[in-house]
Amino acid sequence: MEVDEVVCLPRLSRVAVCGGTHGNELSGVYLVRELLKAEKKVRKKEEEEEEPLSVQMVLSNPRAMQQCRRYIDTDLNRCFTHATLNGSTSDSDPYEMIRSRELNAMLGPKGSPKAVDLVCDLHNTTANMGLCLIAYSDCDWICLHIFRHLQRQMPDIPLRYIHFDVSSKESYSLDSVGKHGFAMEIGPQPHGVVRSNIYTAMKVGVQHVLDWVRFFNSGTIFEGGFVDVFTMVKHIDYPRDSETHNITAAIHPQLQDRDFCLLHPEDALFQTFSGETLRYKGNEPLYPFFVNECAYYEKGIALSLARKRHVMIPFLVFKG
Image (tube, rainbow, N blue to C red; front, side):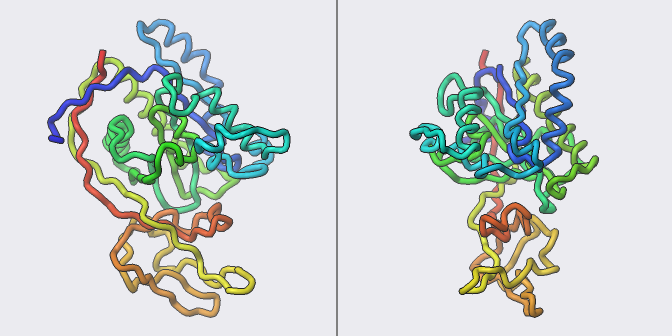
């Protein structure tokens, strides 16, 4: 593929902006509530447009939001695999499995022509990651062009594109229900807390996403170029006691808050509770992210590691 190749893609007529998939990640909760308040004004404006854009605001996990918890029974953002959405149902199913099927009916069905064109699912992290788009494809030109648009429009905020190399059947998060989709992850922000600077960055980011969609639908030609993509390679767990399985170390002070700073073999990785430094024993330098994410203690993840690649994206235009 040449950088000046032109790719034509269909109009993005239906967009979903989702918040509260994790009920204690409050920027998305409060932003979607604000967007719902403004919905009538938006609809009136869109009725005046020749080709209205349908933007659906969704509060994904209302029960968890009411209790300001990540989830009630199980992590909703792991309930959107093909097997979960299409498996047999029971009255005893966890609440989030039931809710994932409701959301799939509302926004999908996943993998079908009826699915919404774009899902933007809003998340917070306790890690020092800035604003990240997390997607399952490194060649979804819609998502990559949106990312580059955000980079240009928000130069004062660190932005990264994270790629989880997972098949469409195995993709597990809400954003995978749409024809295109990504999680907008922004931090650091403690769970159960809303910080105005983080909330504002998310609000501005979502507005730029919707602006880009309208530019695309109006026939704007977006030039090709290059973006950096961080492809996840592996997760690293905390050191643990072999008998109790309790963790025996914390992220080393030299690594804490240094998400996306290259981690070299023999760099400090953990500091044990007795004061010993444990070093990174990998074979190659990689980029850490989700460093010491609060919600990942239960998943056995102290941090994730990624390779950075320079990805070429083509010119893009709406196919009328």
